[in-house]
Length: 69
Image (cartoon, rainbow, N blue to C red; front, top):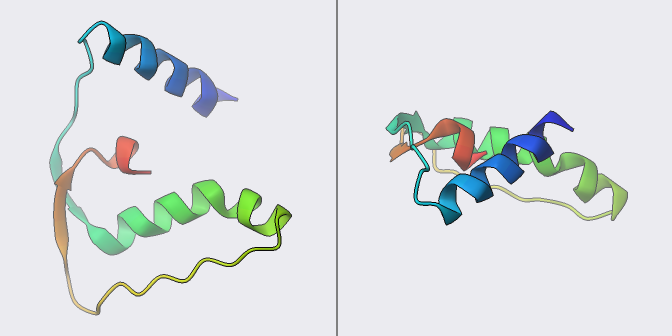
C-alpha cells in the first residue's frame, strides 16, 4: 500500500514538474532483482515466468534506484 501511495505522489509531482531524481551509479543486476521482487506476485499469480539474461560482470547504469524498481 505504501508503494501505491508513493507512486501516486510521484505522478502528482511529475505532473507539476517537481519530481526529483536521485541519480547514482546502480548495478544493473541489482536493479533487475529489485524490479523482479516488485512484480513477482503478479508473475506467480498469472503463472508466467520471467527470464533475465543479465551478462556476468559489473554493469552500471546511472539512475534512481527507487524509480528503477
